[in-house]
Length: 417
Image (cartoon, rainbow, N blue to C red; front, side, top):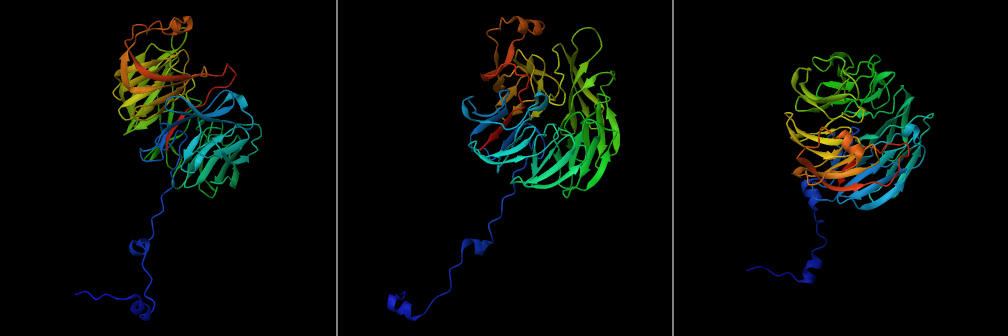
């Protein structure tokens, strides 16, 4: 039979050992790794980041032509907007970066961090000598940006850790575990370590796009040759990739997935607006398939590469967003009067910003018959070869508030939190 101890007897026994917490029993609670945005288009290079393991709400961010950063919900309803500080040189707007710390965006003069309600956490003025501050990239709570003259590393609170004159440009940097890549359209590509020491420089490669990393090599669109340069991890040029059978074609920045490269191209042969298409190669540039289309392919290749999402390609063109399989089979399209920028994509949702300051959102998994066709003359002119199309991507909403202000709306970002 159990002995029952009275309060008096318990007090006479004196103090007992302190209880052991669950943390002491199993060890300290592991710290979560920071959620990074190491590439211009996010961790998976599709403009999307999930901060809540699929359980939160989707939000859409984009820098718009009226000088505001907008946040919308999935239905296109405005949650908040923030007036962006500083200048906007040459009419360019970038895409923001998102981590679990907050929302980061750049203008010509400032790098700004917001919380997820749009409230400013900090704002850092960075003198750029009249050039555009590049879009931020973030890894391990460090932020890399560049100007026309400097490569800059800041901590997550906006304190400048170092600023080196490296002739970096306004193209976004690339952050790897042991180096940061700063591309420049005139001076080549520079790699530094996280202390700002230059590791290597490839002066001959005039970068005209974001640098794409894949295992043991880099890919970047070259300004001087309109083709793709392949470099090893020490900056040595391995090869150049051109469109097989047409060395004069202008090729977009590549998108890489599972050992394949997907690129758009413009065929400059013939009279009138250049037509083109897209093609797929292996890592060494050997052609796997090629698709020629009648739609005019977008020209601004630093911002118009294809987006690969799971089993499909989303391809910007001058009057529609095209959707193809990874084997080059046509799935559908989203009609638009204007050409657009690289979309942001999630499982059943994409957002697409056009040159005409229109933001469109839709479902790339839901194709439906086209019931009406716009009577707009400009639209009909661009789509004269496409009017017999029977499939489009299902559109959720359109957003358009600004007139032509001389600025192009930035590439969109989707996050879940």
